[in-house]
Image (cartoon, one colour):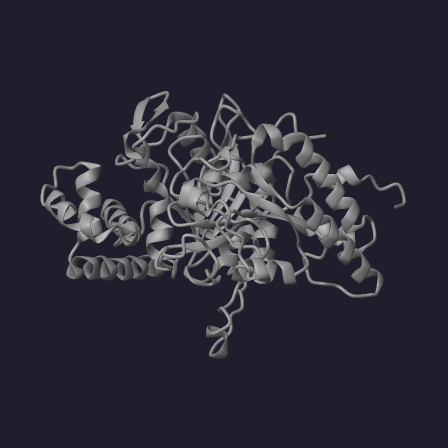
Length: 485
């Protein structure tokens, strides 16, 4: 290996690891064994990887090396070990979505995105932890227990892709496949100091995700990584229509609008009274924006014309709540309809309305969704990226009390409703726009803080490239203490 030390790749990018394998600096088996040793050392405290496919991963790595010896390249991820959120089916591997009733579920085929990662040459190390049916901003369930944040084991890594975020941040995986309907990629990315990407709606196939009844209206699959370049590579590998739709059309990732940071026209907001940021988060977001002064073509504060943040948030909450109505039993509906009549501002009343709303109300919400997308797209005629917070707080202590909506998050400025986390992730999800998370610093207690970069519809490379061009400026990923070796 010419003096090359395998551990030099521990926190390398996915792209760098793949290049090292292709160039013969390390074999896939050596790299996979390195990461397996790290999993065996660090995962017991983290509980990030909950179904560990060690034997299968070693066999895949060995096959990747044999293929390379024959002069064959499996794809751009040839021989690199990655992890999969335990909501995506993997053939022959236990897939539970954190649900006790699925604790013995072993699918016969891969989810569409998993299949594409495998065909690109990735070595699958196992499945990462989630909340039950991916419905929380923490990652715990009765099947596998609680996942801890590598930055502070007493805090959550976020949810619902919390296990994947913890694994990548701790150097136990080079990429993790996640999904996002309520910030489930973006919240774990910012809580664990990673880059994460919520793609434009429908550019990645969703087949093979559990719960299957999640509507593609809002939900997407997407990647988490330590480097933004890896997000783009993952999209190129996984993107495009599923098999049946592929008969009619194809997809390619459009190039970024700008080749240099100086060409970007950037908009931003620093805060909003409906969901104010904690002081340290606001300071970090403001500091990141200030670093752009004089370095971009335009830097404009304020919401896009025609964007009503509170209205978009309220309509989004109605739609996301309605997604889960399919889980209801028919006999529950009459009681919920009665509760929905009493709109007293409570969570229960609002959700009851969303679950039992007449068709015309849902159609009105869908129309508002398209109006909102149009308003954002008009803005992107004169701007290339829009910056806003990812969350009002940093990672918070574990709290598994029920019901979920009664929980409170403590901040230096006081106690906050748990579901305030929805606010800042609303705008990209509601409109289907792409959004990239980039780390920008840490709180006084050392917990990571991220910023959210919304890009134009279908132009995912633009927000990802902005994250790439600002990596040195904003600070980029830094390994958590205790995991560097």
